[in-house]
Image 1 (cartoon, rainbow, N blue to C red):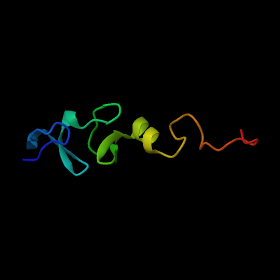
Image 2 (image 1 turned 180 degrees about the vertical axis):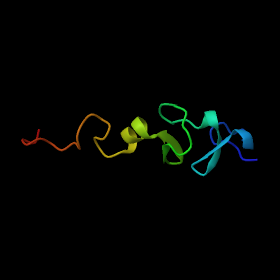
Image 3 (image 1 turned 30 degrees about the vertical axis):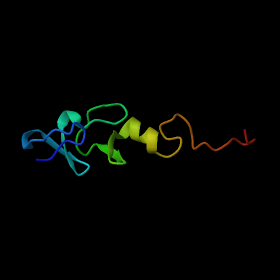
Length: 80
């Protein structure tokens, strides 16, 4: 019987959600940062851990400036 990567308890067929190649309990599949419950296929992964696409994954691992209220971090015309 597979074990949930979050709580380490056995996951029975009737309660399993498969994501990131593992079987989870539905309430255990949560964003690592904000703890929002995720549904299978509607999130991203980093180092084997699930994150909601927006805002957590985009803010933590997206392109510089994306989701942070700024641009790419390029200095202005005068280098300031």
